[in-house]
Image (tube, rainbow, N blue to C red; front, side, top):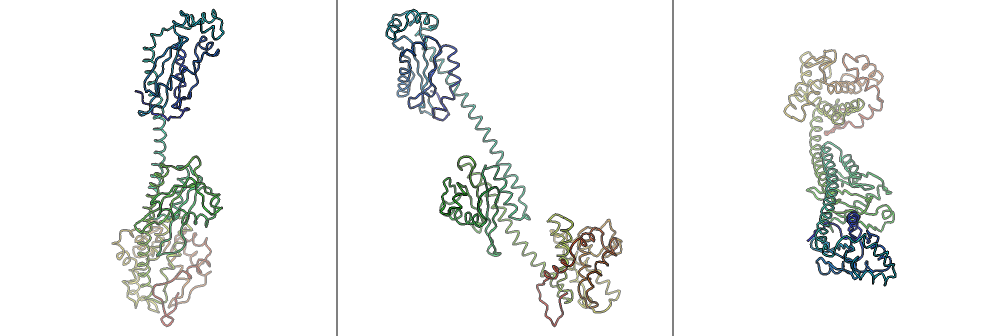
Length: 551
């Protein structure tokens, strides 16, 4: 029994045996292949001149072969027969997983034809020249009928070998294709995993995912939506990669309305290869899609979609790939939301803590927030990475936290400080470093906080460090601190004019302030920066007019 792991179409069967037909012709066998319906998958090509002469004259060999092929397929066994003209015919069924999908027939002219009277009668019936045909028979008829048993054994073995080789080629091709696809999928999942930084913006992450899907899934567009958190509100976040003729609002309706609504009905991934929505604009733009929900503990938090397969329809492989990517994206979004909540809680606590320091002195209320904002703008001007910019912002926000340990009478004293009082003020960077020193996540913030009153000329405090020993965080916060102090009203003086502030900063560049940080600050629109700092400066503890006025 032969096993043929191939498709059952006539074209596929013929393709496998096409080379074998040519090889069999070289040894004088006329091989033909038939499909399961009895139609020729490969037309009979006659290998010798005698056969061609007889068949062209109407000998009916093709009809006989077709009949025998149908017989072996119906009886599921090989057959050997001798046609009236004397030629020998062999037929073998072709099976695939115990199911007959075709038959192979082979015929050859026998020596008995050349020596018998049947050939003469055939020539007479077909009106052929007997002498010419006899001469052809003597040249072409090299095997006897008795050889058929050995030939059919060899024929089956050759047929089986060819099938095995074709199977191996197909399996190797499929394996290579699967390995290539799997490699692409694993590479994509690896890239996505590597980019899952909790500090990354969800929209940026999802856009990267969609860009990668364009190549791996072979789609014209990929899109995603993350639903807004109920506690935050605002619009849903929609991202798109590729080309699709839809507006943002139409895309939002497609994702959150037409597609997301089907998740409840189909319990998971949704594939629609004949998408026909009622909206004509969307119907024209989207032919088919595959979509998966992005799920967290709180439920469905978004949708990931591949749109318009460039070749063919979406299948189970696409569903599996998108499901794997959707799982990764769901983890990222869930972690991102959790991180945002924790970050919001932390920032709320830090703002409340710094506001409590500002509240001790009504004239410096909002100072910590303004220094944090100005520090952030300077860091952005110096083109630092986002993570470092936020660290410098935190440093600016917390730079005066050590004033918790300074007596309020010293902080709010309207006149000149005594040496002892000034020494207490000078301790606040060290006190702040001790307060935050036990929080491992703020180690780098503490370094900037401790050094924000140090100076490049070594005349700062609390350690008197020189230029080469100062971290950039402390240098930026130190300049922002002085800038806000000079532009704010204090108990002992009014705010300085803006030009006087700029001149003072230029004067002490390289001594009190780092020159590169000064350069970055002065490249900005100072009036705009000052106005922005006043707008954003706020405090958790509002200050009444009777208690003072905001700086």
